[in-house]
Image 1 (tube, rainbow, N blue to C red):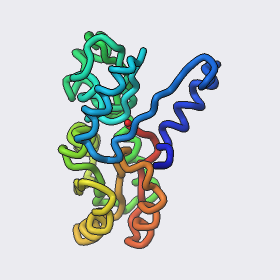
Image 2: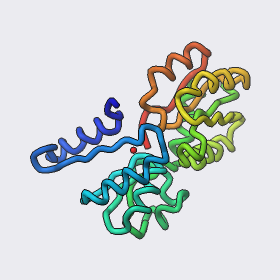
Image 3: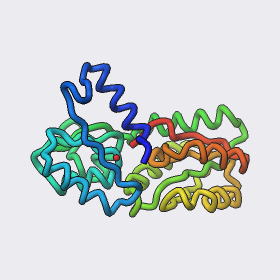
Image 4: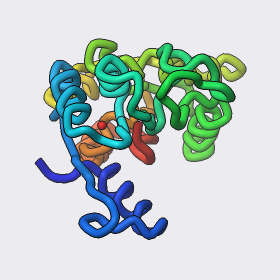
Length: 214
């Protein structure tokens, strides 16, 4: 499968720090291909190598990596570490997992603000997210947006799906609910072209897919 946008960005970031693949660092990239049940198998494979550090990009892969090792350092890339039980706190995570948190009311509020600036008459916003079994990050993600919207008159309409094959149904559901805009969970970042086309076809403004939570 083609490289995930995060992998390209990760490689570029390493190069800026003078880590050159094949020279002073080796990368072992694994993809679940959207199949959460493969996460445990791939995490165990990386532990057997063994890897010096494991970087995880989705909530289910972080959970699988923690189940596979309590000694190899795990770096999470934009998830919900405290809410998911991966870290005791952001200041003192404890254990072998650390990383970034995507749970930031200020960022969630900014997303809503940008959409309202684009459409001052905005009243109803859909949230395109994953079902909890596909990616548990959707729970904290939606709740973060709910908190940000609680001080406004905006109404949020969560639409949770299992994968890309449900995009068409999801946008039809948004249109039926009268959504004027949609915020897309970062899980769907690789499908941004299709999502932009669907949003345009349904006359829905789109936000999200700008940064990612592998």
